[in-house]
Length: 318
Image (tube, rainbow, N blue to C red):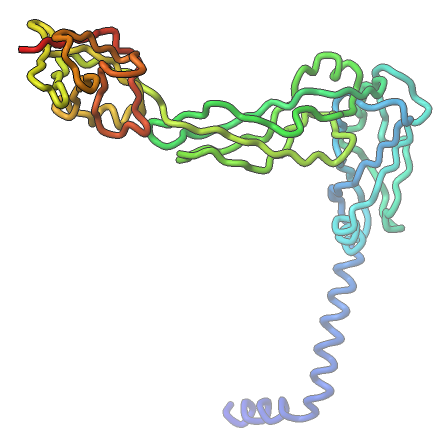
């Protein structure tokens, strides 16, 4: 037994080139046989639909269809990679609905040796309409939430219109074309951004459209009313608020976050008297252009403003 095994192992080492050639030939023969075996499979084909220049489909037709073919596997694989093209010439058809039987049109690029046994879909429905053109207003669309206590005030678009082409029935009802959504998440300042159009199906821009949007983001304003704000007379020269008028009521407007952090002890009303005051009695108001004048001292006057101050203060010399 050992002698036979030893003889077999030794024989394997003889003529290695010949044995390798035989192995390669066997593999090639097996591959060729496999490729020549017939099979049935589906292949995607490109649809090339052509219409008269004055007509356009109301709904864009599909770009591809599926065909069932039978033939050698190697040819099927080639067709699946190369994607044959089905030329559908509708340039003689007029306005209205049309039923297109795909098997009535020629296939280009189909490897010889394959037979087509079916289409999916077998019939394609297309409705043609007159091609129209018009200028349409562009409307901005934004998504997301700006930074806390901020909001989108407005969006200015440039250019504000776009000239488009499409089916007359569609354009007759088209009042605006929206932009692709602008994401304003976390914004706390105004920004200028490039925008694109979200064109409806079957509608196209007649020229390349380059647009920008200026998105105005500002703080959300809030109004608070403060009562019993103390009044102090500056350089009083013996003047003080009259009895019962030592406080005033005011309304402030500003960003929500700033006003929420505002404390009542940070607010002070002041009265400025004219130089050489000696009348003994003055009435000061917030609206006065000159002394006697009532003013308000408070944090962040750069963003917080006196919205309403209906009260006036009478000061008298004590």
